[in-house]
Amino acid sequence: MMQSHNPPPSWRTLRGLLCAACLAWASAGGIAGEDHDRARKALEAGEVLPLRTILERIERDYPGQVMDVELERQRQAGTERWVYEIKLLRTGGALVKLKVDARDGSVISHRVRDRAEGEPAGPRTPASAGRH
Image (cartoon, rainbow, N blue to C red; front, side):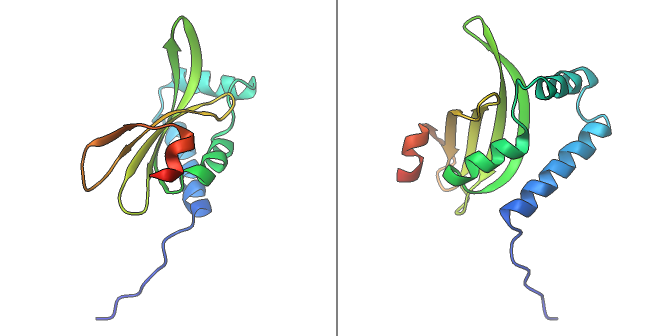
């Protein structure tokens, strides 16, 4: 039996599917109502950038397939901020976990877990991402 070979979907297709899945999940009650309302109000008030904008910005420095996205309110040193937590699967199997400031799109931190090693490579700065 002959198998057809389909090329992998593009980043835009994956991003579109992810956005559609998030919207469907949210509308079906997958996100707790209160959390969803807080996130929506933050977007409407300009406290956070849309996910699409965040993904477009990180795509240049962190290419890969988006596996998971969360928007969370984090408290640190007496202040609160919205943070997107994004997990990417890179070519070769490395898993990258990014924490991105939802207000301005800056990468706060990231960790790389190499598939071969199975252990985190540790925190890395955005400037060092391309040198690994």
